[in-house]
Image (tube, rainbow, N blue to C red):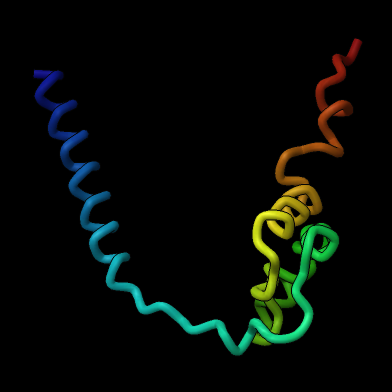
Length: 102
């Protein structure tokens, strides 16, 4: 009986995931070509935007002309800088968090 419940639960989750995937394929894509003019942000821009991301997130709630992530970026290097700047991989706090207290 428990095996039948597990099969039912897994099939329900897979069915829901399939429906979500199917419906998200119909989402409208927004043209961003108007945003891709001017300065292209690289690693250092991503690093800076990662550092100020919490402030940008708060400002973004009240103003529509602010974003957390720059649209006009050079791809992987910008994303790498953004992740490091936001502390996404824990480079800055890793040693302090792993020390054992005596």
